[in-house]
Image (cartoon, rainbow, N blue to C red):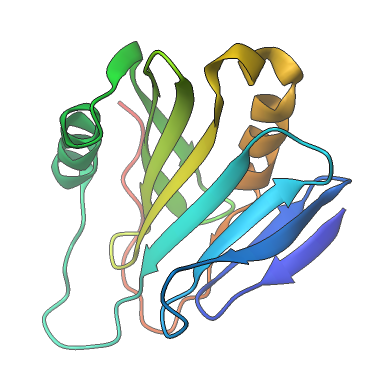
Length: 158
């Protein structure tokens, strides 16, 4: 397993996974991880709090963003939104699984109260049983914000 850091987060890649850059815009590359010879990829978008009025990102915002996802991307819910947290990693959030006739997608909306991560694992629907989702979940469990500014404890489950 390799620990890989970007400008505003780190993850530990499962064996065989590596970072690739996906972007149509050279100034705003999308950090993306995929497994060598695999069928899907995990893409990250991270908004990092750098100062000013604290955003105080909470559960309502995170689940609200997740609830918008299927309509925006023309997908169906496959399972209900699920609360997820990682006190050791300093984050909390919601995940959800979606599908279309051709795609399988898992989404994670995570925050530490100040910073926000929107991540997706996407693969062809007919290949969702490849075992990559479990590895993508492991990768996400290792996620850490590189915290420049932060305050207060993270909300607890419940």
